[in-house]
Image (cartoon, rainbow, N blue to C red; front, side, top):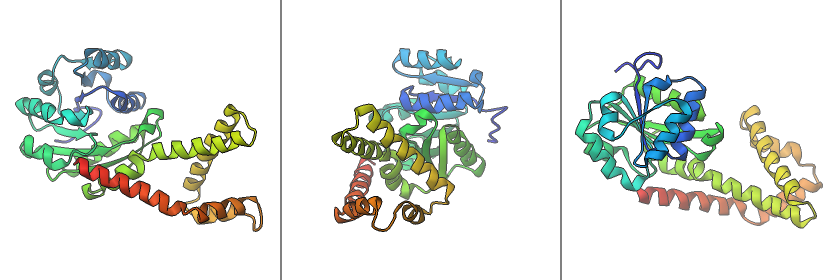
Length: 271
């Protein structure tokens, strides 16, 4: 199947929750696909109706109807209903490319139930809601290069994307999938420390959040040379050096390493 986004892609979305809505908003705003070529379904009719109304998509009444109208599928349901969803898809599966954002569900499972279907597994994250997502895509054995590239370009509409192998997905889940929660916690704790020093809540949160945002942008603009950036802001004998020493003495490296490794372990157990 030659996927040409301007001509022959009819996309079906199964599951219309927050992440699916964020992804599809990016697709809509960037004119990646025509709204008339997008069909949405959710067991909760109001969820699919809201998404269809917001962006001019087509709401369908069941998975069977969606399969009959589309050649690419995005599965965005909760992972615990995947068996039911795949068994419904199986009834009308006709060699569609299947993309899935379900955490912990391996490509092998899709291929087994759908008889060696074409599967793209996607690990997005919640900053897709503000068009700053970080996604990873990996392909099953039946996916050709053109289809893989389509999935990559598809996810670029809500942030940055990398291509990867499935054996790295658990680590990616821990680092970027769950990572926003860890950064939120750090930003919150830094703001709390500022409040304890006399700042008000709004001041502290703005200072902490904007500092995190600006620091991240500086990393991109300096070719990921983080050691040099740390050195640039650290004057010997100065304020930042004192703070760095506290972080180093607290074994923050080990704490964060355990945070990511334990999260990755849990992601692996889900599969």
